[in-house]
Length: 456
Image 1 (cartoon, one colour):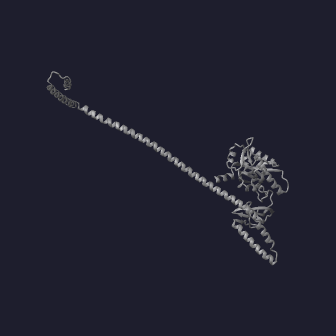
Image 2 (spheres, rainbow, N blue to C red):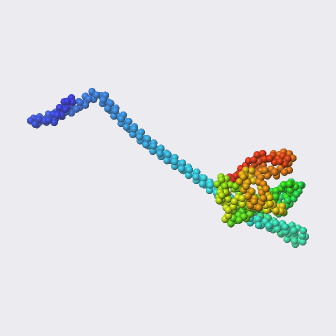
């Protein structure tokens, strides 16, 4: 059939010119008809003879398109998923940044609130301190009122008695005014209350075995509190028992003297002890304390660097690498600062004993190393004293404790937590012989660290 179609096509192409035109036209139409019919028959025979091939072509065509479609769909889905994953990561990152900003903001607000509270607290302290200083100047008024009233008690003249009545009313009104301002008298029960160095100044000590040690026997001048803080301590006479060893009372009536030195802006010493400590609130950069922590230490040591973080005064590096203190326009070694304190103690002792003091025994924390002990000796020499011996503070306390306990064996633990150091020792006392069984401590742990933790 294929060959016949091809012959028909060739016939259509090669017409005979001698033929009758009409006959020729008819022949062409017939041939075209036969050609079309042959093509149709050819296609039909091919489908009949090859049905499987035709079906396979259809089948192969449909899966291929489906496969391509699915591949494209998968690729598109993958791109969408990747884009969504990137967007989710960006969203998560932004959320995390927002949370971090929120936390930082809350932290800053908390810090600001804490600083505000600290500022208000410090401001309140300064106001109370300034007010207290002013009110302290007025305390001589009630003192003089009382003296005048007592002196007028024996007068019998009616005019004087009337004047005394009015005077008493003025005095009462003045006392009420002080009370309204937060000033209260320090109450003392004579022959019952015991001396407290925070509330009382012992101007006189009387040997008296009828009362416990430190009993208040007489009040020379009343003391006052201002908002529960000591405005002026009461000046009293206290009892004591005869002892071989005693603690010297300082010029403020207490048995302890703070190791604090106050300087002026030029770097000169203004006060040592309790008076210097009072100025720490208003002039922290001019008040040097805990200098024991710098004794015998290099500027780069961890202990000095840690102390610099909390010390309000300036700690500098000396030419030899030691830690020094700069106050105002002057620079001092720790030995020099300690010497100021020792000179103060020398003066207190000489005033108490009524004679010169040249030789001393100085106590140091149990864990002081050789350099720190030597620095303490140097401080004594600068103060004009001959240092006979350096002993551990817990051992010194044990010696004082064991003076009247010589007849039998005692084992004691001495716990010493000071402003800058901590020591504990186990000491055995037997018939006057002292033996340190064990000692431990930390030269950089004291009350100042607890204060700083509370502040932080």
